[in-house]
Image 1 (cartoon, rainbow, N blue to C red):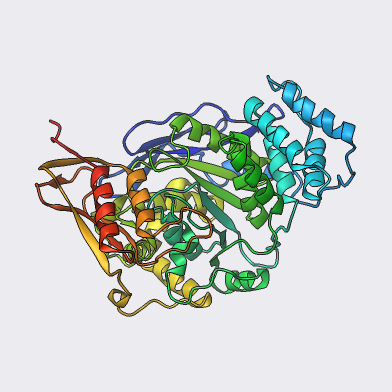
Image 2: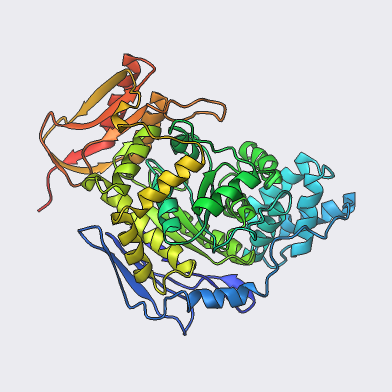
Length: 516
């Protein structure tokens, strides 16, 4: 279930027109302009992707118009609003949002920047910021307000300057899920197409895994690079995957801490600004988003995820970045591996042409998002061409070659053979309680089991066990007999921890009779 959203400026307001989607593996792309056409995207049984009716859905079409729109929007700069707000100024600002129930009296850009700038410098107290956050959560924000909040948070710290890195840069962000290893294949694949991928990623927390934790499972791999090291690797390999360098969007950390204790975490405008300020501080030339919904996603509700996608794309456009978003289902784990080293192994298998059918969903997600990034970067005229280029590079080994170059540049070294990597001392098998067909796998239950095994974190300060995790051996639609192994769990904690996690993973599998 995938949907690609495209947005434009209309009537001096950032907005999105209607778009459609359908079940199974089909998405419809609606571009809101009479000069653009829509297209249908079909995922075929052989994991290939077909795009129909995309004559005008091209880098010369959509993104030429985006660039024309971007030329009227200033790039990230230091805010000129350095005035210290008085007590009455602050009260008036807070009261304006509290009373703005219908969005008819929104903040202007400059007042938002002034408020956040004053907070970042300590002139506004936490209780005053908390009051404003609650008003935003209750009354919402216009797209322009959300874009201004995002931009003000970007300007609170460092913004990457990649002008001395040759090539067109494009980045991707996922809202996270279970077994979400897409970026590990996607980044080197897009770099192999001749684009620059300056990817700054995060660590896992709760049931969602983190790209940095997975990469650090590779012996010697360094993610804490300074900006010059980061840019040197981009110049030499075209791709680097690191933790945020410098002091990027520092005010976001303070605001998020307040959101966490004031029950405003789920506010769409505040989610948008928190996610997008860090991606925009990386300063890529364009951005592709993967917004998850379903049992294993942060935003489980589909409609809520769609609203988040709209808001994030509008914020990207408001900062002058061509931005698109995929809406993807996160009801069951992506691929078969959940856990840091296990996911690296699966990615290597996919890039080496050795993956089996359990990785088909991972392959489809990688190709669709790579095709979009390649088109946005100007290396393909249409989404179809972008996907076909990505497929050829993936199947031809170019992505694996680029991945190896990135590992070497960042100090990593894969064990040879891969099977020589240390294994967890305790494991347990999950067996089918009855014969039938796998009707579904609860991603949340699997993700929480992975945390129990030590593969994830309950709190930010926790360490992770790179050898721990879950291997899913049967996927939705597979026939099973009673006693067949559905999955295996692995941990360094204890045999009893493995048994408890196996029971939890077992409860994630729904087995029933085959329809028809």
